[in-house]
Image 1 (cartoon, rainbow, N blue to C red):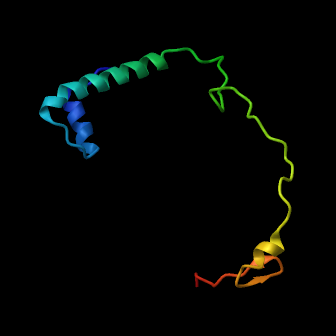
Image 2 (image 1 turned 135 degrees about the vertical axis):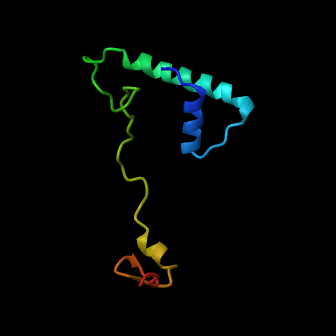
Length: 95
């Protein structure tokens, strides 16, 4: 698909962008080549292609789920101005 100057001007007006006169030919050419690439991609037969969730088709490496630190709740809450039943108490900020 090829665009002409009036179509690019219309798209620029709708997008609220200003294109200089000396750059208009470059925009027409670039946008036309992008649309030509999209046409090529749409022409490819993809009926037997399964959709991918991840284009890399790789498994995520996971670490072992193991405790690495001891529970220090009482020590850390000793510095808090207010704590109750293992929870930090904070002032209400939303009515």
